Image (cartoon, rainbow, N blue to C red; front, side, top):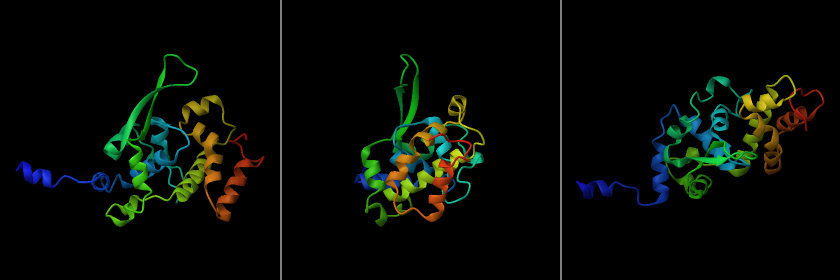
Length: 202
């Protein structure tokens, strides 16, 4: 019995990650893809609340952000992505006692596998990622998240709307790493920077 059980265990990291990805339910697949993408290519570590919001960002639609898809329990990202992600506690900048929980990929090898050619050869190929495409998607998601606001962002907004600070600070970083933006996306960037944009101060 033990020998049979051992024979079914994955023999490589690739097989382990494949098994974990394939075990994600069909219902949670879209959330897992979004979560893994943001964790793999975010400019800085993301808090659990930011990840809960990022899970509701689908750049393939307009508007990209949908409030109904925000994870009700921010820690749900851990159950969706299983052992591919981990939670960390880090001291917040400028404080001596308070800390915030962030979510990260469990190991650098998870990132390496998601962007590798190897994942494209297996059953979990739909989780395969291309760096430029991911930065483009995160650029669109960040800008559309900001465009939902009909007033200049205030400090209280940055606390209430978890993804707002990241989107405002780092959309330009994703812009620099994206490549050959479509005319539509270029116009979206320009709309954010225009004087008519109510939400964003450059």
